[in-house]
Length: 270
Image (cartoon, rainbow, N blue to C red; front, side, top):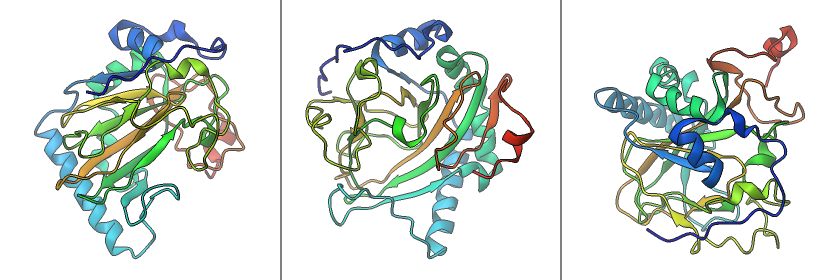
């Protein structure tokens, strides 16, 4: 485990409603900006989800579409197979989003009302799985209250050699860092090196929850085993996504109620 340095805030987080955060997960999230929940998914459900993951990958490969989501700043020649919204491929993956042990932890962070923004499948290929430079996620789908979080479900083990995630604990307290998307080099992000970040290793069935303000990234998969994950992006039901964001937005209620839903919201096409 690499010892990542805790980041001190430069300004208060005026938008985040920390009052919603409860329990062990909420407390860790307030201080660190992330929480690793162990064993939320178990066999035989986990094995079934892994089978459906592989089935989606096979369908992607046969599509002849561009499915390598490697960033331009990643190591040349590497790959990461990707698609949005696994629940549009598989009913079993829709069930995974409504899995009660998963939602119990999510509620400790977001409160009772939770809305799905999207999901992402990532397959980091053995020996050539692409790296992701250190970045924040907020610029891709900003919300009014900055409640947006990711939850990475690990279908395989994720070791440092396999290119597991690395994070800067407490960096969410810095708020929205300019030029932090990871797609371009920036002076603001230069101090967040891959080597200085904390390594987050995980086992199959674990879920890593983290704020979209947390600085994070992952190195290349140099192992002989593929790394399989599905990322679940969601926000508090009371929050509102910036309508100018072009990113796919499902708007599916995973828990409770969406107080911002309307006829126009239900008819949107993105």
